[in-house]
Amino acid sequence: MRLFFVAAFSLLLLSSAQANDHKYFLGGNFGFAALASGDSAKYPLQGSFGFEGGLILNDSWRLKAGFNLFKLKNDTTASSALSFDRDDAAATRRWKATRLGVALERDIFSLAGKLNLVANLGGGLMVWKIVDPVADTVLDAVGSRGEQSELAASEVFLGGGLRLRVDPTNRFSIWLGYNVDYLTNAGAEFSDGILNSRDRWLHQFGIGLAVNFGWRKAPDVWKSDQTWTDVPQRPARRTLPDVDGDNDGVLDERDECLNTPFGAVVDSRGCAIDTDHDGVADGLDDCPGTDSRAIGMVDIYGCPVDSDFDGVPDYLDACPNNPVGAHVDKNGCPVDSDHDGVPDGIDDCPNTLTGVKVDANGCIDLSMLASSMVLNIDYASGSFEVDPKTKERLKSLARLLNFVTDIKLDINGYTDNIGTSRANEQLSEKRALRVRDYLVTQGIASDRMKVFGRGESDFIASNQTSEGRAKNRRIEIVFHK
Image 1 (spheres, rainbow, N blue to C red):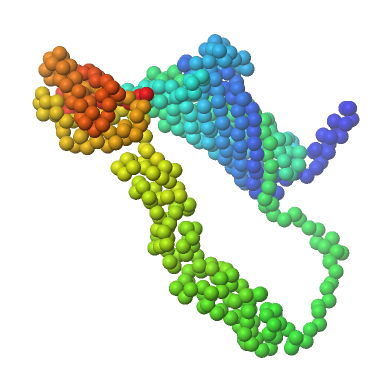
Image 2: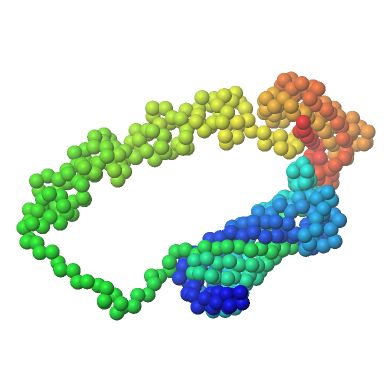
């Protein structure tokens, strides 16, 4: 057995494996990762995987790019993040992340070109979110300006690491390594309390396989060997009158067009015939009867070009830039049966009623309901009437709510700090009731709406200026099921 290993190791050292013989590499990896250093949670080592590829610059340098996926549960009872011990019952959150990174890699030690110690340094973007481990919903957080937001971000990171890479052949590489990334807070807009307590160091331990491809240069050939293998070829003896260089059936001595494309139909002079004058010779023309209006607008096969693949060639197409898949009329223009701005064929909801805002797929756009609606109504002093501009916004909201009947509303009225708190509470309730009453006139059932007079609370601006007080005099509509 010892003799076997000695022989295998000797063969490994003596076999040729020049990394710079190839231009590129592509591979995958699997390993374990842990998120650590924060006060808020501990994420013990858990499985991860990814892919990477890049350029082999020379014997020592590589430029690589890749991505990895992580789904790490925390453990509130864990004593250390760098441990495999984990109690899923003690998990309160799950960190989901996609790592998109680039790095410059250098071989810092090499043993016979087979065993290499490699260092890398780079950075990239970490797209992450923290969710409830059971419900899989994103947890709430406090933003950098005190607003409520989701605990998610697209954050810049810096990283580096070491690998032990084995190159058994010039085609394959196997490596074992460690990498650490530092989350820089660039792109993470949260309160200081969250930023100061969060985990910002991502440790990765992994193993990977890479395939090298793309020859950088042809292998050297020993010149004298080529001399022994080359056999002189005696040139064929032809007389000049028998030469037909372009194989068009017309001998060169009377061929006026000596470079006719192979397969083209030619006349007695050896020149290509183009019956429809579209620039593609007969015999090579897949569409020999092209309309004269299409001249200058055909492809290399002599057929009219249809740039947007709608079945109407460009020379007849009044709308030549249609999205692929859209239904068009005889003039090549999109058909939009429900007049929602999304053509038939790519409209996932082809019967949308007029006046309802839709998304890019032609379906009802529910993005308006994703967050609270703030109405800064231009109230006269002590008034609770809704101004015309706000009524238009409420009409648009009502059109949507009439189709999404399971959505309920909390209508909250707020005032500035001018006047007594009791009077402001009553005034804010009247203003909220007025908004509710207007929505009722637009067809929204009153039992779907609750009204709250919040008075002089939850200020969003300073009451020391008229502009700040105007912002505090508002209605906030919160949507829920």
